[in-house]
Image (tube, rainbow, N blue to C red; front, side, top):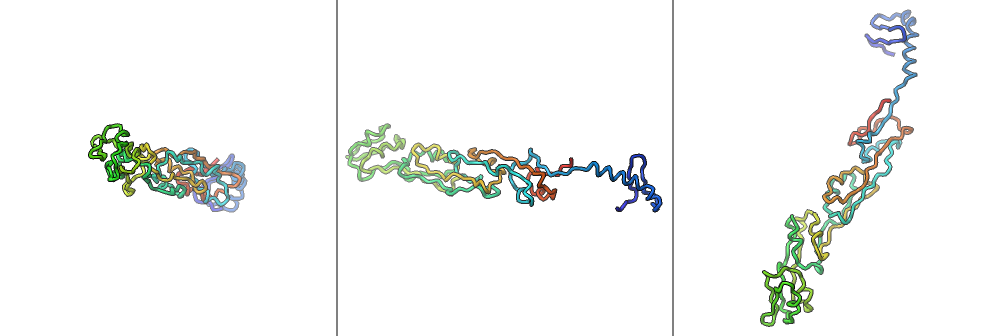
Length: 277
């Protein structure tokens, strides 16, 4: 044992001062007090533990791979799920997921032409200017025979028969589509919505306002429960609160932990620490 100059060891009744030159005789004389001090340390050891601060731990699982003895336990790596009705497929959660657990199979909005009546609700709702109508108005084709079925179907009296053909007053037309549905000869060409995907931000507003189920939204995101670390980053960025779940806290099995401390520096939230008890 190396004893530095100026060190002192306190016994029960006497203090050993090592500032003096310690001769063999003096050392032997003081040995019982030195052993008494060592015995006190042995009988009252400091208990060291690696512990996880449950207030900081978010169950991300980053520490698991660094523990060589499987001493860290995470009850359930993923309890997160995505509500497909709320998810718009915007992809924000996918972009921030550190483990690549979130996938969107189809990130695109489509217009179902058979369902679209060109009402323009989606155009007005789109804040990105990504949706437009082409053509913009209801038009009468040369197929028209002047049967007047469209006239009777129009609730706004915007259609009349002129020279044996249907005529649509565009100022009165509200693009309800009833004339198109009433015409059995395909003589009315309807407006049709189109989506410019280069401008679309996947907000889902067009899907929400469409009354005719004409907007097909992106495939909802899905979470792989195996690779998900329950970090909770996706919860912060989801604009529609489509992601829900409970973050499960990790804890350490003291019987397996060897105090190697390898897990401590790899916890991104500083939740793992050495505890002296």
